Image: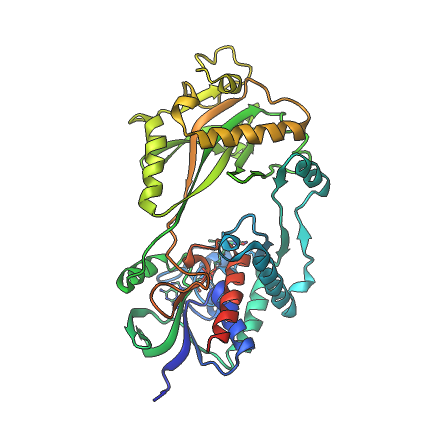
Length: 452
Ligand SMILES: Cc1cc2nc3c(=O)[nH]c(=O)nc-3n(C[C@H](O)[C@H](O)[C@H](O)COP(=O)(O)OP(=O)(O)OC[C@H]3O[C@@H](n4cnc5c(N)ncnc54)[C@H](O)[C@@H]3O)c2cc1C
């Protein structure tokens, strides 16, 4: 009954996650019949005028982004951490992710990645001091391959895989139909059937994937929303932390909440950001302006998870929309007034000059307690770390937000509610980086190879 166009596992997309998935499947279970379909080209054919500093010469989607290796054909900076680059750790556990990243790194090194040293962004002394005050300095182990080495490694992995795995490049999947017990795929290069199907089409495939998800009946679920107060302080207030780096990322966490500094702008300004019909205080990097400001700003984001995208947006609209009052109103309050829960009336004699024109007010009346609580707890720790009080003239702006796409519903093995249909890498909504995308590939590869 098995014919030439039938496979055990078909992977749509040949990006970073899919490469590590296919490679793991091959290593763990060489007898599996695996098919990888990509809309782009083989790696050595992925050329574009942009490579020579000219303009893009690609017909449809740019070769820089699509084809074997996906966005792995880039700078190749593998950040081995759970602290940013996705939420894989939240789904499968931080320990597990670190172990998977070790495997990813050992594969990279097996194909030559070891010629660049792995380094850490961690400042041990600062990290220890911060930990003493219940703050974590976010840092990561990095293997920064660079464009040339990234491509060499991907090419070597391809050379190993192409002996046993079928690859179809420049192939469009036009429809996916369920055909018990598996799937029928119609493509620009003919029909294929597969027992199991994995989709790993990343960011470049998001439009295509949206359409497929709709026709397959996939549903969106959990949606993250980060909101928080943007803080504008005296430029030198964080000097002792920023001696060796331009910016730093600090996290406060307890049983109730987690709060992380985001988009820190030493000498920068605050500007209005318009998104989803809402207006928020955003940081503008000093490089964007000729004259540096005397202040430093950052947002203190508290992530929250909602059961649907609509619920997340409703929440943002009710809080930020409430502040905006139908136009572009942003509220500002002095730190001292914030602690006293009294309204700021004027900033005329404030020693820290606001870089954004905003309406003086009282955050107690305008933003939920969660974000105020987060700021208070964070600032107590920060004062401990700095060994000095934060200036009472520090300005607090309400309210900044970062929006996320909703995730599609998958179980802990990335299987969708539609049987035998899996997601991997960025299209799962769980990863946003090379290392996490690759780790998700190794993870799913191990699982699917055992499931036969
Ligand atoms: C410019 C840029 C630079 C980046 N640099 C870094 C970095 O240095 N470090 C870091 O950690 N992260 C970086 N990222 C993020 C990182 O590249 C991605 O998180 C990661 O590549 C995701 O892997 P993936 O397998 O999910 O998707 P991708 O690597 O994007 O692969 C998706 C694959 O699907 C294919 N595809 C798309 N649509 C279809 C379709 N309809 N049919 C068939 N195939 C399809 C594409 O050809 C591609 O091969 C960068 C992102 C960008 C945009």
